[in-house]
Length: 432
Image 1 (spheres, rainbow, N blue to C red):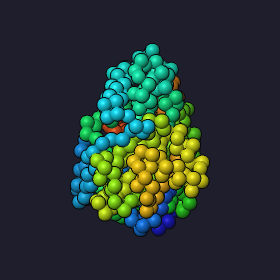
Image 2 (cartoon, rainbow, N blue to C red):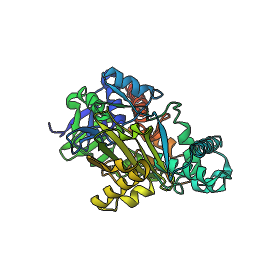
Image 3 (tube, one colour):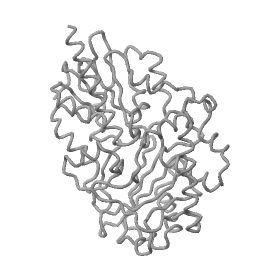
């Protein structure tokens, strides 16, 4: 159906979990809406593909835990089957350490993280400091500092010397799980949950329809796509900040809002599902989890759905992902496989399928799990983005009050934005 001359209450740009969650709220409230998605699928940074064996696998966001209540409840409501991530056995560090030293290194690196999070992000003494600057000043042993740096570059997917310390503290304080964040994944993929939500939206969802121009007027907003225009009272930009910054706004956004959107950079991550005939590591008393101390941002874990579907996931984050993505396909697979063999033994070379997904510079989402602020002076960027402009609202997992950068954060951000927009519509209706 053409969008030409369509009128609605709210136009949502982006059908990741933020946009989908907001759309569900509007539907429940009886507010008319249209949701536009540039891709030919919903989910954003959540994605499923077929591997070389014909199996449907998570190539994007996948894991969650019981401390993420909104996602847990949504998955249960849709009857999803949870697979518990296998964590029994020894955690491997490479180059290898004695178990005692490895445990000490882990605990000290966690202590560094706790120490960081006790710092007041508004402390003027850290105003211009990056995470790397601060880490260099710490007196901890080199192994623990390297493990902490690997954690930062693996989870946030940017070099530690790019990320403002105050920002990482504020961001990390909102990631409040006490249970292992890789506790569960969905047997049918996280993408299946996004598709279930999308199915509830009917023809209000438009796939393959990118917003090319957003024009604000005194009474509302006109969104232009390749198939026409949609006039709405309010618009919700449910995109990562760095992607939202690339949209064509008319008139131009207020300078403070444009600046707030411009200070973000997408992280880089490559995710690989490596399939084996059997989970051989378990036979050797290993959990399948590996952290490479000499390769910050490189991590592996067991992602077997069952013994017949043995798999490891390898995550490559930050600068390492940017370097390795320049390798050709054959050299890249050889490099990753060699690292697995070094850590887990010769059997790790018996790969039956190797399925990589390079998220760096993704056309529609920019990169990894999350965008990050990379300007140490941008203290008000999140508040400015959330304030938006008349008839123009922004939401993304990045600016969520809980679990920024996670699916949980996206759901929360979408619901908060929907409530705010409902309030704005009700206020204008009562005043008219």
